[in-house]
Image (cartoon, rainbow, N blue to C red):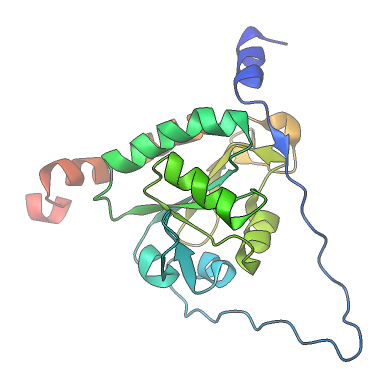
Amino acid sequence: MHLAALLASSLFAVAPIVQDAPAIGRAPGAKAPTPAVVVEDGPNARLLAMIGETLEKADGTTVSAKEALDGRKHVLIYFTASWCGPCRRFTPDLVKFAEEHKDATDFAIVLVGSDRSSDAQRAYMEKAKMPFLAVPFGAPGVKKIKQAYAGSGIPNLVILDANGKAVKGSYETDGRYSPENRGSYIGPQRVLAAFTEMRPDAEKTEKTGKTATDAG
């Protein structure tokens, strides 16, 4: 094993996320499942259909998911948990990035947690002073998003485009996101660095307050 790979492995050792298998049938007389939230076509429509109606702040208050993601070109999904040591080491970097770009309108960060209770998830968000939103603990959206985008362990940072396609993530093979390949783990730090390089025009707009059209 190369030294760089060994260091990355020791720094961001992943912990498995166990996902429940989807139900195949329903017992006679059982209640029908809650209908999926219908979202009109548009940016992040696929992700919004998974999330549902609301996202949650660190203090437990909720906001409209549609309004929070409106117009965002990218959504960074952060799979994490308070009991995960590597997550706790990376989280401050993501919080710092979010604070430095708190006025950004081109992206949003959404936490998808693997904590064991809503109180644990909320305490984690509060202690880390996370300025971003989370899919509420226990919401159907948690399972749906994990099935669509999660890898075999955490921390995992995944960049989605407005069509809901994963363009980069902590599991990657030959430059493509491959969450099914546990051996492809590159860690969230490299994903965050890549995202910074992806948005130079947005960085310039944040600093100057002018768009390319305004500048012309």
